[in-house]
Amino acid sequence: MRRVEERDAPLHDYTENIWGIWNMQSKLKLYGFNNLTKSLSFNIYDVCYAKSPREQRDYIAYIDEQYNSERLTKILFHVTKMIGAHVLNVSKQDYEPQGASVTFLIAESNMIPAGQKSAASAALSYQESLLPSNKDGKINNGSDGRNDKQSCEQKDAYKYCNCDCYGNDELVAHLDKSHITVHTYPEYHPETNIATFRVDIDVATCGEITPLSTLDFLIGSFDSDIITMDYRVRGFTRNVEGKKIFIDHTITSIQDYIDKVTLDKYDAIDINMYQANIFHTKMLIKEIDLQNYLFNSDIYEITPKTRLQISNSLRQEMIEIFSGANIF
Image 1 (tube, rainbow, N blue to C red):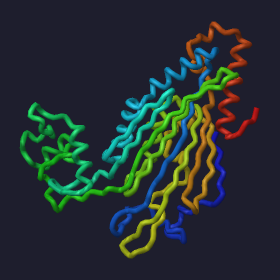
Image 2: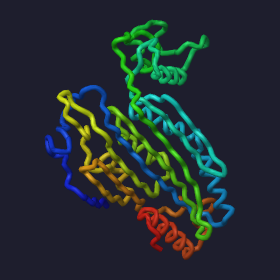
Image 3: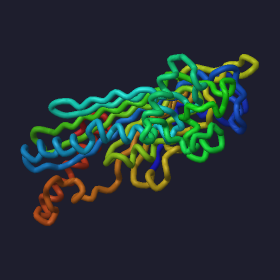
Image 4: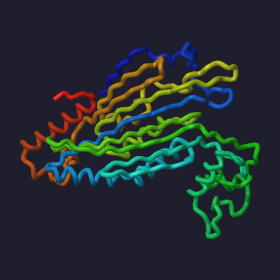
């Protein structure tokens, strides 16, 4: 079921309007760099039943280990690849007693001329460190020592290579103030035997890259029972005539960028403010397979009456998180 609450009628059907939204059917010709910031923030919640305080603590320890900073770093590297960006810097930290954080500073895929001395050079050096090297310590870009553009492209290594394939006049680097962050928050209720695991993710990009294409992957990377998402386009850029453009792509709902197979598993609601380019979506899992929510327990060891009580407790917890209110 999909319900949409629209505070303002969508304006994206117009070729041009006072909000600076232009015809989206063709690429925009911009003046200089695209200064629009596209920010996707969302929370993912996993809910679990642990029948004793000890099992609650064991669940927290288990989920904390499953999604430690190393695992989160691998997920964010994949996200960076999906949106066509490059990693400039990585910061990661595990916490006591639980939780982890990872932050990526990223840049658009345009690269840097060989030998250029700028802050952007750090991006190239970092990317080179991710590529396999031979025993002499040189980057193995698949070119067999030849500085030709074709050989680099065959291995997709031209994006990172330090050769002169493109020449100093052909490459431009954008340090576009983009980042990806993730934080985890395991916790449990002291009385109801319910434990929850929350993941906060924020993807902010400038330029042409957009974070919306990562939604299916990120939702599938975690056990997602409840999801709340916010997408916003900030700032403005200009076309060649100097006209301000406040959004450079068509969007009526975040749900438009989520696969139908994924959406069919959830009840979803939108609260969108089109004039402000703010989009909000909440999703709640439809069906509960109780066995998947029991930690270190088998459903057949539990009486039917207790199964019903556990199912009700899980559903009530999910509804309150989804609603953002203490209802029961």
